[in-house]
Length: 246
Length: 230
Image (cartoon, rainbow over all chains, first blue to last red; front, side):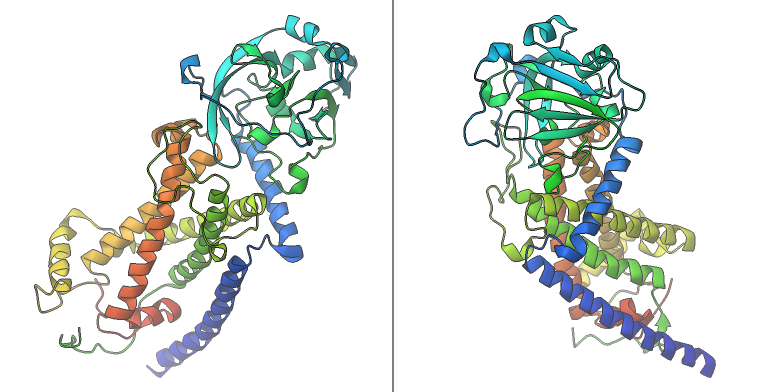
């Protein structure tokens, strides 16, 4: 009996200490919430490390390279789709006729493709839902050439694992994993809702895919570079999730 | 409550909560608070539900500016990183707790089953003052069972709706099941307010009905009015 009681007391004492620790943790939590804290210098790097693990889970475990996003009828299109750019004004080309898409990096055949050449390549069109990281979504139709067709044409080296998509909008860019870039619904879009791609949405050419969040879909494209080192990106370098797959 | 005769005092403190239950209970308090606070910061980026151009889902929180003290992350990216980091330990906590319930057989004392319905009505009568004496009960009374079963299901719902909006293409069937991306987002958001309402009632009942249950959840030992076991 006394043995049982002794153990009871020990449990109580230990747990009071544990409770105190918990109270301190809870108090800190409340304080943290009060400050709108992003983790500061102590925790923010750890959160970013977890974010890299989530990237890995997203790419290696959850992503199916062949599963297609649901498609919709043109009648389902949203009345409008918001857009944005980084520059002070809508990025425009001085002379659109001189524009070329540069394909380089770990390739046997670097390319300089005009819009006409891209339009003569295999065509893909679909009506899909666009998901913004902010939480809104909208449906639109996109027309373009699959990234896989362009990659095939530049004859990539076996070491290529990423593609860096770069725009002429104030240095905006996005790094992509190989599987998502070669997904059948990942395209270089030159058309939207049966019309040429409007300047607000990245004319003359933008990256589009229904399997990534909107901020991964580089507008105002100028180049795609195949690499073996993970490229960052405009939002990704500021802390947004890198993989951002849907 | 003071005019209710207390049941005969038991033989002393009884072991009430296993350490796994206590650990997962308090860890869930901290982690869920972090998930809710970062979730509210995420919500602020677009305080609507429905595709662009509408129609929008009815919600009293449309365009709501939630107070700064209730948000965690500072901005959208910071909040996302908190949310997607805390989700792992929270889900691990939930799985550990459920595994314990199954392995120990404790689920029998917690899961509300049809045969508990009668007891639940009696408990409700007692709370409403239609019945003077507290109905006999096991470890938990039928209304508690109903509440604890409900909150586990709510936890499952919040995880599933979360997955449906985290990967709406890879888990497309799940997103479809909840009525689409915006509907899943809507339900995910509502689980927050149900969790908060549950917590408010839960804490109020602890202090009003059985304050000893608080110490039991901390130390594991219960020395209050309802020491019986099933």
